Length: 371
Ligand code: ADP
Image 1 (cartoon, protein in one colour):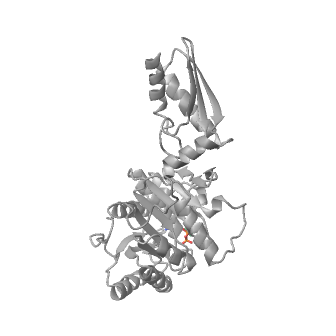
Image 2 (cartoon, rainbow, N blue to C red):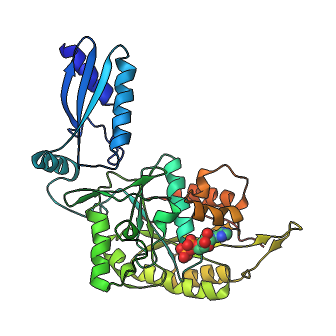
Image 3 (tube, rainbow, N blue to C red):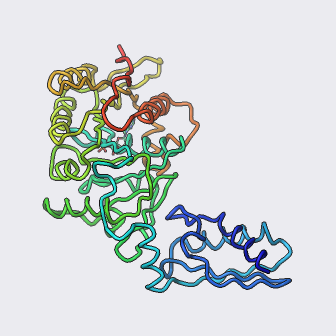
């Protein structure tokens, strides 16, 4: 019998909690097990009552058991952890102290995606970058730090809220990316009108109260410009590197310079520049440079001159109807196999960023400026 109970547990060990990403057997989620010649009854203890993942977990448990014990009638009973059990789980996941896991000695590569102004495609680039990295097999977290203008939940098609374990939050996972946004906590159309300290608190909580597990990359969708959030991020994520998104227009590039210099001032290395909406292919197959073509070079040159870091142009993403539509559908373009130049450019960008090392050393990242 002991051996059979062990085989029940090893079947259950194949089931990961969808939010925490660890086997349910390691999370003390398995309760009573009753095994007889015909029946197998297993109690699964969820972290919260009415857990949004209940149906998913129940189904995963049932099929894992059915695969091993096809001759038995399987019964899965759902229960909820007691306060003591929850405290034990929290301790196991986070340890005693609540700390920011992305401080000085963190092994996570933190990439800030910023822009001078809104509407240049910063969030679109951010989600495709995060999802693209996850598709390469990296553990990826995504923080929507654009508190006033959050759009990440929509772009990622996320409608669920984080599950709370006391003061710890389990971030929803979409396309393999653990994601958190203020938009998950607000009623629809509720504006955010906070001052600096509230913004700082929100960002701090995103970093410390969310269970991130161990991440290879943390991607941050920064608010446009150079405000309070950028300063907080500078303090909280000292080793982050910044990616600056701009269109090719000189006006956009000029404001992007200010945002890049603010990142620099906060101590962040500039990883590189992404030019978005670079051109449109017209019906004759010709490139039309709708937003001009001099701005990005100006941005790169100015950054070289002032930062001394020689940040380079990493990608030029053309205007693409598929990309625009993907932000409406909530399915990032990078998850598709569509024939599209914007998708190709994003894929190349993901590969470059995947090669980012901890600490300085990104000079080798380079693409040639198109004409
Ligand atoms: P930001 O975060 O800079 O405010 P968004 O990522 O929200 O900008 O993009 C603004 C709008 O532009 C969205 O509707 C998005 O679909 C669209 N967009 C972004 N990049 C492209 C592109 N390369 N081609 C076509 N539409 C784009």
